[in-house]
Length: 235
Picture 1: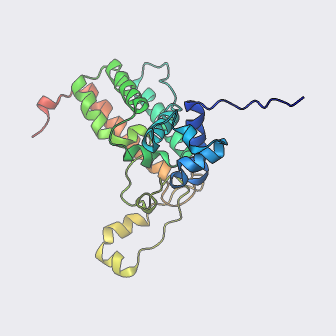
Picture 2: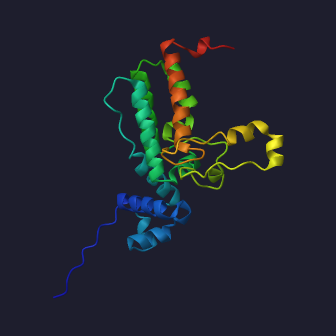
Picture 3: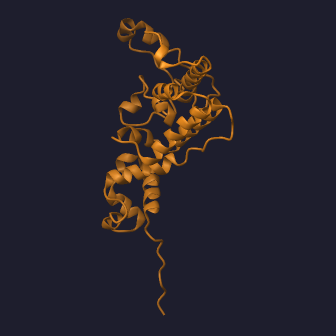
């Protein structure tokens, strides 16, 4: 008597999680409907019953990984809650190095991204922020809300990577460039950190991220305590 083979049903969730795993392992550039179908053991046309096209697939992948960000902590201190969630988003991006550029590439935010941003505004409002100040805070935080920043000196992002990998030690600028831009040369060589840094010596991406995040949060806290409004901002 022949045995009946039981295949795992093909679902949208299974497709999205397989796509995330493929992008994690080989980079987003390696992702194609054909490669994904091969990983799942199906023909490519089977995927289109669940995702209309690659754009819809990418949106779904973003929603899967954004869903990994921790929910708000049960804490009345808005600053602590916001900081924890942003650092949770940061950890999500370190698990999925392709996600930052994928999020940036979308013309419209996905539903999970919108839900996350909405919950962050809700935390600010519950912390006593006016809608006016919360609006400007979200602008000031920018992509840092989602765990990444658009780095001025990060060549890996310009090359289409995320810049979350271990940084190389600082290297001296060519003499002619250092002479022309002495201040940039000075700070380039001042970017070393403690040997115990989470990502090693050099321009420590995690340190720089948290440094800027804490500066912003401290400044935002002062504005909130002062009852700042855009109507009375300096001209």
